[in-house]
Image (cartoon, rainbow over the protein chains, first blue to last red):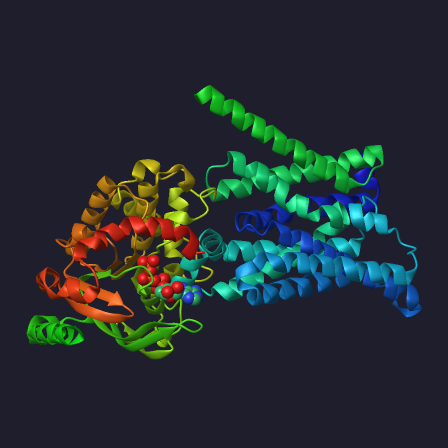
Length: 280
Length: 286
Ligand SMILES: Nc1ncnc2c1ncn2[C@@H]1O[C@H](COP(=O)(O)OP(=O)(O)OP(=O)(O)O)[C@@H](O)[C@H]1O
Ligand SMILES: [Mg+2]
């Protein structure tokens, strides 16, 4: 495998991208989970799917657009979707979670229309749904790297504010921080990370990579920083393990990655149970 | 009845203004002719209230009387519709020094108890505004956090997750979070809901110390006016209108006679209302 990575550019792309998203997906996932917004990731990933379908459709219908990278269109859709969610959450103040099914079904609906308009795609849609070891291009890698640097820098710089906003929104507002703007930046970052992660884990499983490592981490971590640390550790383990296994077994990596994340989750629950028993 | 009430207020205001000392102190909060309405219903009408430096003001009033609304206006969580609020002498819309104000909310003990944050991390978050955007905690800030945790007697718990503490301890954590930015004014909205009687007592003693030793001005919404009447310096009775505002001694006198009359029920019923309150919370504060 190491030899393979040294030899083939597509493997290098896949693994470097994997390492990056193994960090940023769980990192942003921690804030999503503690704010109880887990379903937003699901909604946005389906909107991203609509963007990808739109891009593939354009590519098929207009020969001039054959070089179009679906990643960009996916990103545009995802960010637009995140803005819609925010609007809807403001409209339905007392039923904020309604925004999520609305956007989610809207995303799937659009995606279905684009896919049937295209009457089937040359490119394998399957790889977008469940990820792929061979589909990541150099250009994708660079785009994803830039997004990650932006996201990590923002989280470092706005860590205090993001923490306060997650822990206690009212207090955040009462202490005079720009809660609205920071929330806005946050939701756009979520949209970007989803678009960036889909090449490897696939649209349908992006949200799992953001939430499962966090769910495992919360079981055993003391404090917020430790929660972040374990989440990234578990996320990275799942991504690298999943990529390697799927390369050898010739499977879609998304499934493998998520299954490893689930196993880690079960393990932490068991470990927690055992240690509690021992303590008692 | 209203006439009696107005006479009482006149008497008190006269005594109040006569007190020269009082006038020379800085006013921390000035509320002038403030009214507020949610969708249809007027919740506050023509409130005038000034709180001077070093005061410990207890605000009492029945459920739904607008106490939390008034605090939210003062904290800038709600925008004033009518009238004016000044904080530290500055018009609220231009006020920037929010770190001078510590806030412990009525909902403080109904936060997400599964939240993975240690006591230390929660208290540190009280420095967010003071530090400012893109700034990190330095050694002096870490010392401040430790000091604040120590001052509420929780140093031994600093690395525990906040969800693993008792309700009373959690409330202390929120006090520490408010204290850590060295506030000049602390605003507390029924901070003792869900705290047992013994801890309530020691909690109020702690507030008393903050007020007397550190000179922090306190604004406390409470239902146990009985428990704290020996600690607060001033009392305000709110029920849409401000029915009374004055020194505690005057309030005590008042409560003997006219007070209970205009309030609609006897003052000791106020304490009963506390129990009432617990039931209402879950539903009304969603
Ligand atoms: N967000 C809101 N929208 C509409 N009406 C509200 C809202 N918040 C409060 N109210 C109404 O305003 C009135 C005053 O509420 P407020 O919370 O200020 O009372 P309170 O004195 O703090 O009561 P409690 O002792 O129960 O805490 C109540 O009648 C309440 O129904
Ligand atoms: Mg209230």
